Length: 296
Ligand code: NAD
Image 1 (cartoon, rainbow, N blue to C red):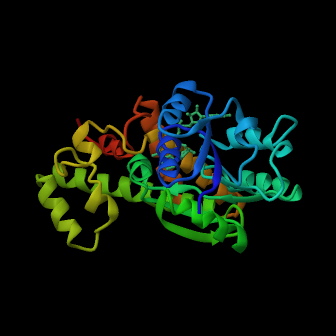
Image 2 (image 1 turned 180 degrees about the horizontal axis):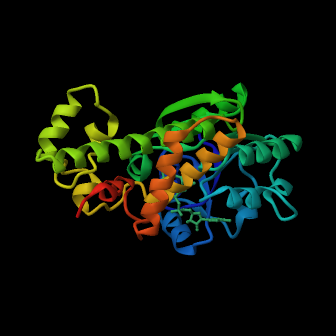
């Protein structure tokens, strides 16, 4: 079914996601503070909105894909927020990675005005956004989830319902906290092997076939030269930036504090990624943590 969709935030992720909605036959109205990305989408079949309010009117669904919580809250809430222009029954899908408390706050305020809201952060990176194979992790009530599922299916492959509003964000940061721990641990183990005279590729093959096997070893080896397709073999070009991993770990630490959860490994990973940022590696791929363990 073709829908009228507004899309705000056309960056590395939002741009290709909106392009996939156009390809799927929806009428897509787009807005970003950066006019050149709006023009790109408009030359590929989208309608260019003049501002966020224009983008949010006469639509069935509004999708946002913004950097962080403060951008999402200021887009929707407050005196100048879209809460004042969105029609009742519009479905708002926020795909940004933000803290769960902010997602719940935006969802509750929109809900009071009869506007439906789900949080739907993604996994899969720019490659997944471009190929239309993203994983969406959705928080919201059952009816809104099934409404959102139809739209998200045109941009992704796996669509999970994690629970109520905010649950998508919690599941996403649990995953990314684990991923950062696995990446740090894998880097530490490979460097120790190298320091003891082993070949990194041989050691990686052994661990991939043994009980240390994990996603970073199998698909994203952090040691340059072991895996041709991994960012490590391309001078740590992202990929998934250190800055974004550090941001997600900050969100994970907030969630841990709010729920009184013990996360010693996550906390260590957060510190390691902060050190990497201080070394000027913020825009490298997150597998660059391998360099922290190098003796050279
Ligand atoms: P990005 O910085 O490339 O894009 C953000 C876009 O939002 C920019 O084009 C910016 O101009 C626009 N923007 C900011 N404030 C705006 C406003 N008020 N109105 C309109 N436009 C506004 O970021 P990205 O890499 O596309 O990431 C977006 C979100 O997705 C982040 O929350 C990130 O954590 C998450 N994410 C990113 C990746 C990745 O690999 N890049 C993977 C998974 C999740």
